[in-house]
Image 1 (tube, rainbow, N blue to C red):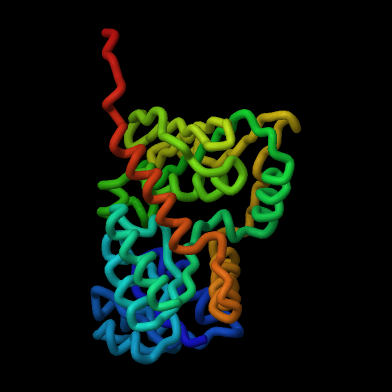
Image 2: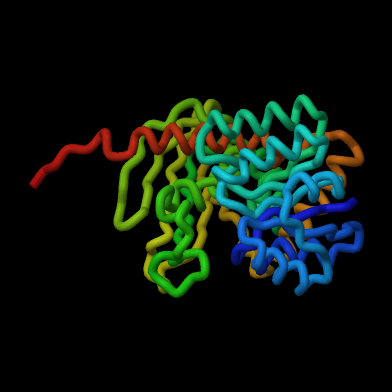
Length: 298
């Protein structure tokens, strides 16, 4: 499959471009970026072509991989879908529900495959764990802690304008939801959402199956406190999402495999744009509640 990359930032450099250039079933056709010099540099590093026009790249590929801020991604993803190109997208799908819906509708109308890179979902063993816990059922409650130190260390992602604006709720919240929803089921309502230190968000969800879950999300945690935990408690006892030390690069290779399979078979992937839209709807609901249900006691 001929795949072009849209985006030239740190994530594109560290994950997208190396995974695409090293994949046996992919022809890494070229790179487009909002800065022509960055596109040329990244393309040269991986022996491919830099494009200064998005439509020219779309004309030469079967699919696009997108490594751009969510508001930019949504518009270009819909444009690519309307051109008949399969979509390998990043999370969050879009910065608003309306823009996310445009992507889903464009992909559906064009009949193209879509996969959204919820990183943890493409780590080996995660889907097996999710399937096992979903089959067990009887879960009473769950907690997901996604604590990063992007804003408290010298991270290449710390200066990202969209992360500064949207915070951990929109950056790592999608990862937590991508693991919880397949196990606990659809979210019936967001019952509470509150600010914590820095960009930290605390969210409480009520699931249709009767379980509740809590999310603690942050990009401003001290580096010594950073880490990820997902814990389920119910009739089967306690189950914790296994750790995976492999990192994002091999996971992205699995996401490429998933797009290839969805395009070949026509079967939607569990992490397609429609699923990512539902995640976006939950994030937007939580965002609308933060700070509205508080009472000062001092």
